[in-house]
Structures are given as structure tokens and as C-alpha cells.
Image (cartoon, rainbow, N blue to C red; front, side, top):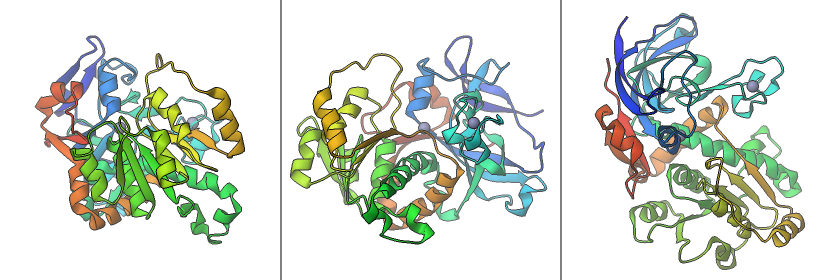
Amino acid sequence: MTSMRAIALEKASGRPVLKDDHPEPVLHAPDQLLIRVLQVGICGTDRAIVRGEGGEPPPGDGYLVLGHEMLGEVVSAGNAAAADYEPGDLVVCTVRRSCGQPECPTCAHGESDMCYTGKYVERGIFHAHGYMTSRIVESTEYTVKLPEELRPFGVLMEPTTVVEKAILESVLVQHRLDWVRSLDDSSAIARDWRFVRRALVAGAGPIGMMAAFLLRHHDVETHVTDVVPEDGYKASLVNSIGARYWNVSKTPAAEIPSQVGNIDLIVEATGIAPVAYELLNALGVNGVLVFTGVPGDRGGEFQLQGGHLMRQQVLWNQIVMGSVNANRSYFVQAVKDLSEISRKWPDALARVITGHHPLEDYEVALTTQPKDEVKAVFDIPDV
Ligand SMILES: [Zn+2]
Ligand SMILES: [Zn+2]
């Protein structure tokens, strides 16, 4: 058996390590692909796992290979997979695998992101090895093919799918409104974003940034908030795609609607609970506030004007919801949107990837975050 290098969290020490003896996987089912990993994005979840917050190796293993945001290339395909994939095809794999429990209707319908039982596994996070290694094996059920034009940007697919889901769920929710339903009577209505006349994205990290790209791609007036300077890297990136950057340490989010108008959708991408709930003060009539950030389970106590906010939520028909992960259908949608975005704003999209690291950088890359980082990636060598 051939061995590979892999960035992993060692269970015994709780430390990140660069292993050199992770076994190279082999195909063992006809629907599987052997995939060479090209790049893996570094995300807040990876850094949280390294800090000891969550993350669990596959049962019986002493380490968890990290990484869930990958871009790869097909090396070989099983008999059934070979009908649709050939060597050299650019691919991205999803993160969560269905629980397989008979009582879980969502997993049975390919919606493992909505799993009822919680008995799913997630590659690179929970009970399954991730992608920070040279080669992986995956079923076509959890793989999507990318056009060659997405080679420079494919590593952004997974964070893009997180906001595809968050926004498309909001779009579905807004079909409670007759005027939205009447926009279109075709099946394409589920993809109709026209109810979002004005959106606010809280947090200019990778999730917030991809939300801004998607919203601007759908011609939505988009406002992005963070606490970094207005003349800095992230602000200029936001402004370059026609969104507007707001530094909330100067203008609190609650003051933005009085300057711009009713906010129909807020995508929260800060993971900071007090900031997230404060966004209710910026949400408009019939608005949807969707949380995508995942804070730690403890701390984050804060006070809200409960009477005011509950009164507003009822009188303004507001919805607050959470959204996690993304199933394959959102990956398919993200391939289409990211391809179009890469043609529309190639330079801006390239600026989202702010750093490239060799595997040897694992310790510093997983424990520190440079000020202007949006998305840093590991470039993965082949075996
Ligand atoms: Zn991630
Ligand atoms: Zn399930």
C-alpha cells in the first residue's frame, strides 16, 4: 500500500500534524472515483477543530485528516462512474454523507444537509477523513464535475454552496408572498431572486464575500458590513463588484436601512451571536434573516430589547432562520453561478483567494489568520 502525506489533527495530542503514512485509497465500488486533490481551502471550521472545538476522527483512527473545501482531478473511475467521468476531469466533492437511517426522509432524498437524525458524517470534520492529502476516493453521488474554466476558482465552490443554500432557502420562504409567486409561473420560480430587492451581508470573510458575489450576480443591491477599514483590501474587493461596504464600527448596521431603504434579506456570516441578533434591528418588512456562522456553544451572552424586536418581528412578518452545509443540488447550482461570475468578474474573483500555502505551512496556516485574508488555500502535491 502506498503512503501519502496528509494534514491531520492527532487525537492523542490534540495537535495538527503533517503525516507521511496516510494510506492511499483504492477504488472498491463501481460508482467511485479516485481523485487527485489539487487545492483545499482553509476555513474557520478547520481552525476551530485545531483549537479543540469539534472534529472527530473516523471510529478507530487516531487522527482526522482535515479539510472539506476541495478541488480535484479524476485519476480513474469505477465501471459505473466511467460513464460520466474520465481522467483529468475537474471535480469537487461535497462534505456531508447521509445518515442512512430508515427514519430519515431528508437523507433518503439526497438532502443530508437537512438530516433529522444527526447520525451523518462529514469529511474532514466528523467521523470521516477530509481532503488535505494527495488522493481521495469518493462516490459520484457526492461529486460534481466542473468546467475547465473554473480551475483557478474551483476551491471556492464549497463556501459558495453554503450561501447558495442560505439564499435559495430564503427565496423559497419568500414564495409565501403572492407578488413573488406571480413573478413567474414556471418551475424556474424556485430560482427567482427578484424578491430580494436589497440585501445586507454581515461579515466580509469567505462566506460573506461569496454571498456578495452571488447577490450582485443576480443584480441585487448589496450592502456588506464588517469592522475593517473602508480603504482596506476587503472593502475595495466588495466595492469592485458593485456592492457597498460599510464599516459598522462607524455606522451601526441598525442605521443602514434609514439611509438605503427596506432590507429584504440579511445573510449573517460573522458567527458572532451578539452581532448576529443585532441584525434584527436592520431587517426590513417581510424580511428574512439567515444565520450561516457557527459560534462556539458557550459564551456569547448579550441583551436584546426583546419587546421591541418581538413586536417588530410580528408586525413586519419577519423570519429568522439558520442554514448549514449544502447538498449536491446546491453544488450543481454553484457550478453554474461560479462559472458565470468568473466570466463577469475574473479579477475580483481571483482576489478572493488571498494566500497559497505548501503543506509544510500547516501549523501557521491553521493557527493564525492574516488581517486581509479572505480565503487561503493549501496547494497539494501528488503522491
Ligand atoms: Zn468551510
Ligand atoms: Zn439523515
